Length: 313
Image (cartoon, rainbow, N blue to C red; front, side, top):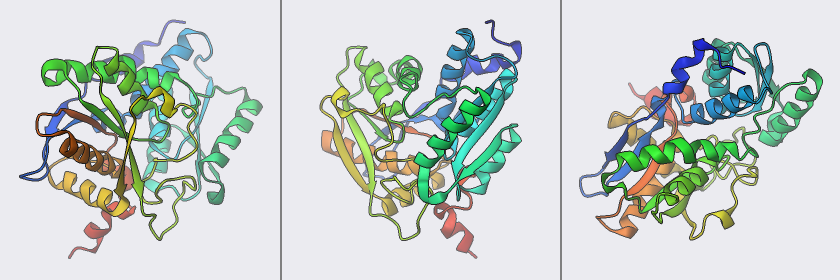
């Protein structure tokens, strides 16, 4: 089916800049993909565009179709944006307790919200999404299990990185894992070029004292970074995978440091940068380590990231 004209700007999505960022005078340089500059403010625009465009072309969705996704934030915002462009109805199923900024952004884009019990976490949202889809014959992008999630990054994000980084050489690629699509897709796409990057899983540790909405999270303080949910993230497909643990308080401090350097990002960006900087230290000053700054700050104004700013005189 021919794609509607009004969504033409989605096909211009990217390339986002790849910026060499050094936060400390004697610290390492990390090559950061500025994914917060995508239309809805996150890297999830890539998977929303890719999955829904493919479904449209294959005749699975059309104007008036219902799209449903379980997501605590950025994916739902991206799906709401693309659905609006395609003239479709979008329903986001989210655990109770997500930041109100994310709810408002989805509603502003015409999306609907269904909340599931907080104690069930994202698994409860996935189950409810499947139930609702059966009722309304809706389309499920299935970000946690759909291999097209990783394909979107392999075909676009990775190729942009290779075009932008000096010499086309990537020594390591670093990302936190929610669905796992970013890390897997970047690794696969870069490896296909002939590079042999080290894949690095950025993992937050030291749970905060305040419970959050993702009950399966590695950390209750870094939204969207989950454990034991993804069916895409399989370590055996990432030979040589390394895990770098980052204390969640350090991830939050790094997020604020990125903000002070002019990068308006969320907590997962601090996690990614901190892990990537550690990997760069291990590999030495000539290494080119790539990571992603996944989303923008405004969806986190009422979260712990902004606590010092709220308390300032």
